[in-house]
Image 1 (tube, rainbow, N blue to C red):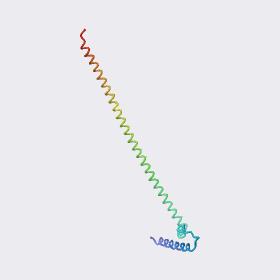
Image 2 (spheres, one colour):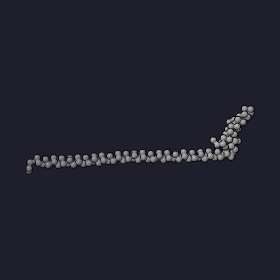
Image 3 (cartoon, helix red, strand yellow):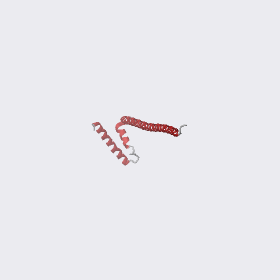
Image 4 (cartoon, rainbow, N blue to C red):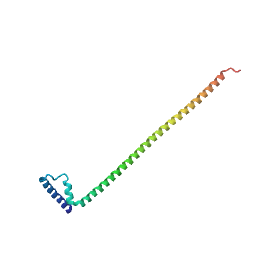
Length: 135
């Protein structure tokens, strides 16, 4: 601790003892704000204002940092949501492609079945014609 800080601490202790002594004999003295009054007396209102300004600046910096982190987390959440949506869309597209492929295969099988059935009918006709006696 610097000598200046030591002097201030000593003055603060002396003032506290002084106020406590007054409060023990005078019931009208309010001890609730004694620390603030002592600090104001020892440091003076100008130094107190400087310290308050420093605390406010520090608080503003902390708020700005928290805000920045909040915005980063929001952006990260949006990116993760977009990734999930893209993955879901890819899964849906793959499922649609599989369904389309299955439908195409069903159409192809149906076409082949129809061709085979037509061939079978033609063969039956040829067989029936071959069984007829010549006229």
